[in-house]
Amino acid sequence: MRVGIGYDIHRFDGAKRTLKLGGVTIPSARGLAGHSDADVLLHAVADALFGAVGAPDIGEQFPSEDPRYRRADSQMFVRAACQAVRRSGWAVANLDATVIADSPRLTGHKPRMRAAISRLLGVTPDQVSVKAKTTEGLGHAGAGIAAHAVVLLEKSPPRRRMSRRRTR
Image (cartoon, rainbow, N blue to C red):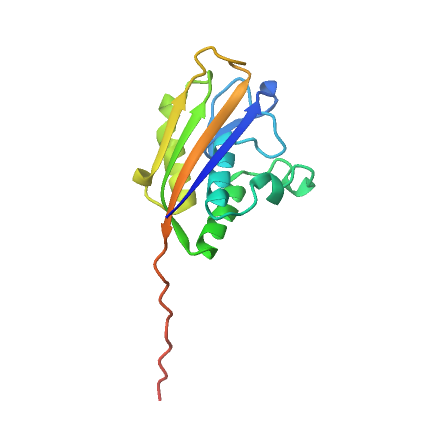
């Protein structure tokens, strides 16, 4: 088994951007600042996956200086991380994630985030947990959103090769 931990944080960017969390658009008066779509939850998930297989983090693999990733959908980063996991001979056993946000309220959106993330990872929704917490007024409350993710990988079963039968 292998374990990976991911973390990301983005400040709010006013009303200019759409808020995306876990691959889901969340109704909000403010979006997050970032080079890509600033989906902090998917960024944390990707870093957890990359970390579990010892690969460089998303900042190294998808640098913000590279114009190809300007406004990129963060699902792309998770898909690349999943490919790295599979190439390394591992599979996702489960993912546990926490979003830290004072606003907007995320309770009603967590099931959709969980479903979207499970589809990206190629696992069932019961293998994904998404929780939401507030800062309880500590630090820079309300200045942005952060996310933590922990992933457990298990060795994937060997793939069976398809043999071709010759017909005469």
